[in-house]
Every structure is written in structure tokens, then in C-alpha cells.
Image (cartoon, rainbow, N blue to C red; front, side, top):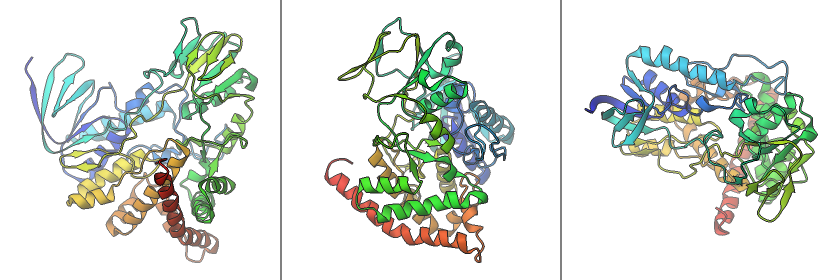
Amino acid sequence: MKTEQLTCDYLIVGAGAVGMAFADVLLHETNANILIVDKNAKPGGHWNYAYPFVTLHQPSAFYGVCSKELNRGVIDKCGMNEGLMGLASGQEVSAYFDAVMNETFLPSNRVQYYPLCEYKGNNQFVSMLNGKHYNVTVNKKIVDATYLNTNIPLTHTPSFTRDDDVAFTPVNTVVENIKGFDNYVVVGGGKTGIDTCLWLLENHVAPHNIHWVVSRDAWLLNRKNTQPLDDFFFDSIGAQANQMEAIAASTSIEDMFDKLEERGVLLRIDKKVRPSMFHGATVSELELKALQTLPSIVRQGRVKHISREELCFESTTWKMPDNALVIDCSASALTNLEIKAVFDGDTITPQTVRAYQPVFSAALIAHVEAAYSDERQKQMLTQVVPLPNRDVDWLPMTAAMLRNMQIWGEDPALKAWIYHCRLDGFSKIVHGVAKDDMQKMQVLGRLKEAAAPAMQKLMTYIQGLKASGQL
């Protein structure tokens, strides 16, 4: 079969949220021609396979592409997110990215889109439908928007084994498999496990019939502190001030986490259990209270094997409840924690340059590509914020985020871009504070005063972790 020759300025591999956010900025800030290759039939990446009750964990205002609103501008009036900004469902997110592609990207006549195609490297990709080969002449750069390698419950291979007669389902297919059981065993302590336990509770499953298998407890974020509205200034910006003050006043890493919890920055399910994990999962206070009603949380480490009679762990077993469905929520959202340079010759590899916000990060990286020409300056402006896994990973993540924010703040043009970026959220709240609003000015003053000593304390802790081999 003859190879078709194509030409573009930027070849973007991956039409997930990161690739779409990157392409959107290029489309609106340059005259570049863009070619997007993706193995899925529709844009949106892992959202094509999302479990049916998934929603964003943080407000929709932080998500999507710069040029098109995802947020419906509503405050939820019921449910466990009551009083907070709306969270788009998986179906809404999927439809949104489809609309961005078909209503913005393709009508521009500067975006070529090849779904159901697998990128093979060396500027080549192959159609998964008919095996047709394509070779691309790339005038500027290749953008690897698949590097973070999102893992999803439907397709991942569990780390445990199970007997064939175990009633078992990935969370993606739980709705069609849920009937006829008395008990539900949810395996996985991360965002997906949280979502599944809350969904069962919302559907009137009694707490004592939900058995949550948590290999590691996690520190959680309070969603009230992530609301990009002026009405939540004292929650969102106040939490940032509280965070800096807690770090600065701490005497040890353990004391720092205690103070972050005391100041409402971090939450945990059980105050008697010390979390050892942090993935940035976000919950409302109502959701936290609901999770705390679960009487059966199994904390015995990682599951090794599942039979109808018991769960087997490394050094113990747990008796399986009668007539139970095991729901697999053990997939780790991001599987590639290794950092590489964002800008490296003719390749751009988008990664997080601000914690918790991969799409804002992708948009900022695309803007840096569009607006700056010096390679070293591009690298300085896009230093990677490492993705967290363990509790102590919170420290280098936070330090890297503070470093980037300081660097960006010293660049007037980039600072202005961030202010106008829809995906940023908080800049407009901060810059909109009236000078005679003494209460808000006091919060900003606290934040500014505590930032430098907090950074110094973080670096001291990080050096100690490195010296002891923990980082």
C-alpha cells in the first residue's frame, strides 16, 4: 500500500485534553498548520472510556481549552457538591471536546485530524482501519501529548490475580453488572475508588454494605478552596495564605502536614490513620462526611489475590462478605512519573508546570512556544512540576510550583497572558481586589509575607529527604 505524504508545522500526537489544549493556543496565537493524530475515534482521550458516573473533581472553569467555556456557570443546588461550582460529567466533557474539534479546529482549515490512527514514531502513523501508512513532513515541531500516559480502569491489567468464579467488574461496566448483590467490595483508594463509594451511597446502598479496600490512605484537597469566584476569595486565596503560613511555622514534615490539616488545606478520611499517599484528589466537605460513614475500610496493603472466600494480602487475609461484587478501581490515573525536558530540540513534551492543572500547563507551554524564540528561556519558563504519589512528594511538587509562579510573575508579558487565560482562574480574583478592601488585602499580605519563609522551609525539608534517600 502506497504511503501518503502529508505536511504540517506542528504534529501533535494525542487528541486528549492535553493535546487539545495545546492545539487551541497554537491555533489562536499563531498561523501554524497543525496535524493531530489520535488512536481514538473521537477527541477527548481517556474521556472516551470514562466510567458512567465520573465527573471532574475540580470546577469545570479549570478544564478544557482556552477559547471555549466548559463551565456552565452554575452553582450546584443539591447533592454532595451543593454550594460549589458545577462539575462537568464525563458525557459533557466528551461532547465538549467533540464540539471544539468540529466547531473550532476543523473549520479553521489549519487543523488536520486523523482519528483511529496509531503514531509509529519518525513522523509516521498508520490507520487502524485499513492499515494505510502516512509520512509527515514537520516544518517545526512534534508535540507528544501522550507522555503522561493516562491509565483507565477499563483497559488496565490489575496487579492482583483472581479466581474465575469471583463476581468482578471494572468500574466502567459496573452499571450493567451491579444487579443482584448484597455487598460491594471497592478495590482502590484513589479518585476512582472515592467516586465509586460515593456513587453507591448516592444510590442508597447502605454504608455497611460497601467495603472499601484502601492500600494507602491519602491526603485530600478541599474543593471549597478551588473555587475561582470572588465569592470564594477567603476560601481559595485564604487557603493559599494558610498553606504558606502552615509550612513556614512547621518544625518538621509531620508537623507541617498536621498544620496543613489544622488550617483546612488538606483533609483525610480518618484522623487516626496517617496518610502516606497524595495524588491531588479533591473532595467536598459533604463528600468527606459521606465517606466517613463507611464502617468497613480494609487497610492491609495491596491485594494479591481474590477468591470468593477472601482477599489475600502480603501477610494476611480478609473474609469476603456474602454475595459480593468486586469493583476494580485500582488503575493509577497517570503511569509515567518520569520527568523530561518540555522543550528538547524539535520535540515538545507537555507535562504539568502547575500542580493539579494539566490542561492549563499544556496551554501555557503552547503559548511559550508561540511567543518566545530562545530555547533556554522556553525551558526556564516551563520547568516541570513533578507529579505526586507519596505524601512526601507534596513537598517538591509545591516547591516547584512556587518556583514557576515566581518566574512567571517576573515576566510581564507572560503574567498578562496568565491573567487573561480562562484556565487560570485565580489571577483575576487577586488582581480584582480593591485597595481599600482591608480584609482581602490582609489575606494577600499574609500570603506574600509567608511565601519566602515557606519556600525556605520546603527546601530544607527536601534536602533532608534527599540526604536520607527518600527523594
